[in-house]
Image (cartoon, rainbow, N blue to C red; front, top):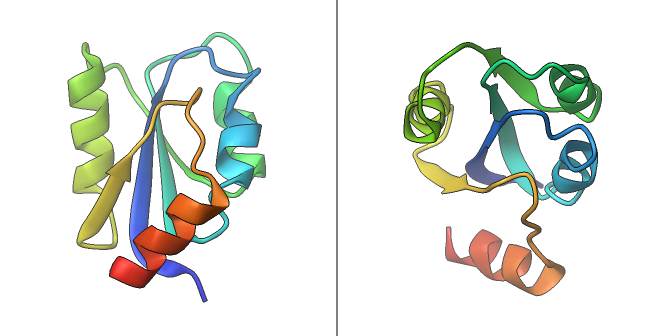
Length: 98
């Protein structure tokens, strides 16, 4: 069963990274990608990988992240960048903790 946690990922032109990042988060209950106006296929790839995608022009990465946090379904939130990965040991520890 997925952990009751939302992972938020702010993006801009991360087509080469986003699917791999999302696929490693199958243990999380929700994944939200806040895309800041990518000119590549980042939003489409994120959605195809199973993430909820918010599109906008928030001005800063902090504003992108905060928009995703505001849309989160769960109280627990993990913020990641598209080039970061959560390994199995950390995923298990997070799931057990929450």
